[in-house]
Image 1 (tube, rainbow, N blue to C red):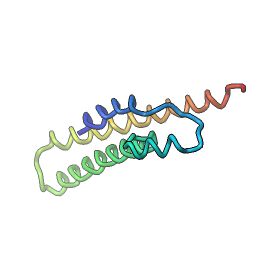
Image 2 (cartoon, rainbow, N blue to C red; image 1 turned 90 degrees about the vertical axis):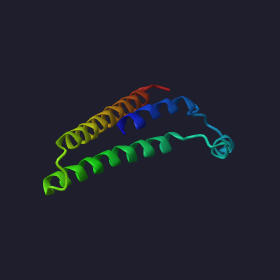
Image 3 (cartoon, rainbow, N blue to C red; image 1 turned 30 degrees about the vertical axis):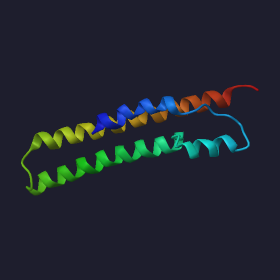
Length: 106
């Protein structure tokens, strides 16, 4: 599961560079089905959330005695933890880039 959203990072290559325009280019991209950066982030956050919810559900099922497969529970928790840590590192890199851009003199 985590491998699916990590491999979707390859779609970053399809994101066009930021251009200041009258909006015509942006409307053309949406008509062509191009993925925006915000859409990409929302999708990635949704997948991370799904991993967290799945891990919590499996943990609750194990605690309630509905399942006895501890391996599945631990693997789901590890996937959710890795996905969350990866997301936090991406957030940190984005904030660092933003701060660097804000420090640039025009």
